[in-house]
Length: 406
Image (spheres, rainbow, N blue to C red):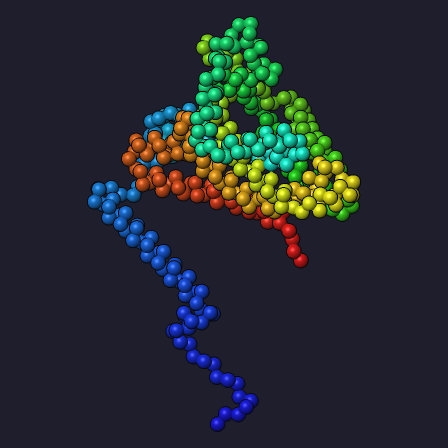
């Protein structure tokens, strides 16, 4: 016989609770989905192995150590046709990362400027930016890549026009840069003894700019005083590196391109394929970023601008200190997707002959070795790793600027 003070007996576990009890239902669904996905993956893998065996083939990445036997026109590291396929893959990956890095920087600058100017009260400026945005984002990026390449390749400035008395007039930036239909020739650094110390000083200057910016921001929030950050940061950027450069006796020299025969000698040759791909991807992605920036700014209450004006802040200060910091929380998430799209769109480089990862590993290497499955798997893994790395860094930055709640 039970009394009123006895605790109720715990009900036993029933298998039906896995579906009808909310405490277990979500876990049950996740386990079922996981098993189904794993089963599908196992089926596909087994089917692939069976088909490869029927074709007398297997999965083997040993071909990466074989001689490549082909040339690559744009190099960031030493490479020759006697190098391995693995070396060719690294060269292609570096070319992809180069375009992605330069493209993200230029696209961000173009997008921010166009997005802000599209909100300008000047009618002509706003309409010009609207025309740029609508024209670029509504035409396929491949057509823009081909258009930029055609313009660069069909220009009249041939290398032979830089010979004779007119050579000085044809070159830019104190006779150090030559823009031709074969590409652009710019000065190349010549590293001497002590040049590593100059580079280290330059990197430390960048770290110093970041540290000064953080300190200046904390000081502004604590006191409300605004320092001339631009000039201070410019001094940190230039003075230490120049001081070390001259103290060490100018260890870094420049190789200036000079016309010799039918082409230029010396300097660094930037091919039209790289320029066309970089500019096309930057302007195309910049048009989408401009709309992201414009929508982010418009999402901020107009009262913020009016309150800043009532406090006597200039429009530039209002944009930099009030509007953009709040708009960043809206801008950054879709901005990550645009960076990822730009990186993946760089695989269209094959259209203009730029040797990136798609052209090397997914093109020539695949065709010469016949290892299509291995090349595709490796290329997908590389693109996945690059995209996840970009997403991770941008999400870290997004967390640093989001609104902190107590």
